[in-house]
Image 1 (cartoon, rainbow, N blue to C red):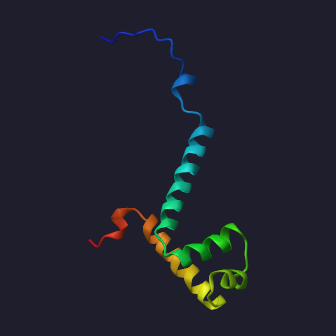
Image 2 (image 1 turned 60 degrees about the horizontal axis):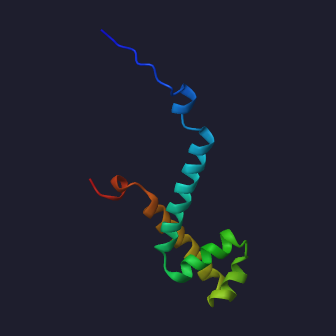
Image 3 (image 1 turned 90 degrees about the horizontal axis):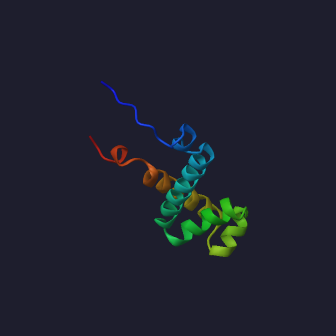
Length: 96
């Protein structure tokens, strides 16, 4: 036998706001990316931030961090690879 209990809570109150969920996921993603960036060597992190966040050319970045444009390209590729590895779930990082 099932007893119904009157509750002042409406269905709308029990559902989480969809916009809030999206914003929460975006914030979590931003925090994960920041943690991944923080794992990188300083010049590699600077190269990625200058190119992707400050929209500088590789030549401009090279001048700022004191390396060649080709080294900037290599640092960015290596840094992105390291970030991808850091962001993968732990189960994918370990060998079976």
